[in-house]
Length: 367
Ligand SMILES: NC(=O)c1ccc[n+]([C@@H]2O[C@H](COP(=O)([O-])OP(=O)(O)OC[C@H]3O[C@@H](n4cnc5c(N)ncnc54)[C@H](O)[C@@H]3O)[C@@H](O)[C@H]2O)c1
Ligand SMILES: [Zn+2]
Image (tube, rainbow, N blue to C red; front, side):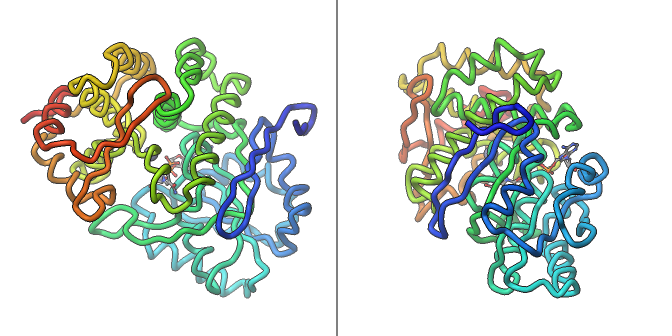
């Protein structure tokens, strides 16, 4: 166990085709960022990229980094996750005469991470990137695994590449300033890890809800550590999503479809996943493969965290059509993850239209 300022920091190693990288997780882990960059010879040229919002809150944490200039600041929010914003980052890199030894340090949520990751993947055919995720979702999910990309007007994440980071530093302290709705959206992904792999996460969230919402760092750090460990294990085993990595898609078949039919405006990603998990549990229960008690446990845990946007105006038919257009349909076959117990899943390739429509009506969609 590592310590920065007397506080434990967890180190996880992820293996990737391009080489292993560390994920440092812990309160005040950002304090150790400079030392880590030096230890991994990530420099000397370090270029920070962040968003106005995030930099305003947390910029001072990075002043000591030895970055040689002021950060490249971009707009964030899903609607800026596009090629225009990537072009702005690339322009700034050209202007700064960044060469192949430059290291980008992306400080922000999943939008910043995905977008700057894609810029790093393409600038000079690939330069190194370090992620400092600042939303719960980015800490437990998007910063690890090397998926980068941007949206196209026709669809989400249609343009992108795999580009593994050289280092990830997840510091729960920065979550203090995260709006409550964003924070909750990340918690639904933590629930996902609880369902697919580590049921103690479910107990931890249920028993410490108040401390978690108060951003009590002692309550959040264990959640981030356990979630990162699962994501790291899965992507180390299956970087390119040829098999095992698909378990991370639990709740995402219906979740992505809900996001798509509402044009990414009605739900935060995690909120759509909360509904998607309930739909997936419904399918399992109807088949007799998911314990009803697991469905009920997740339903009440989600309810305990707060309200979700309504789905009553969304049609099951449209959601079904959107599922057919999803990336999870490979060569005409839908790969659907169902839960068979707390912490256990199976992959189904024979889920029918009837089952999907029934499951989404059960979570409140109209016919
Ligand atoms: N690459 C992957 O494997 C992967 C996995 C999951 C999601 N994603 C992507 O991640 C994106 C969503 O990421 P997100 O949920 O982090 O949203 P986000 O990046 O849009 O951030 C949400 C909001 O929080 C603000 N914010 C960020 N950190 C803050 C902080 N510490 N304090 C206050 N405000 C802060 C941002 O300015 C933004 O307004 C989506 O585009 C999704 O496609 C990628
Ligand atoms: Zn997700």
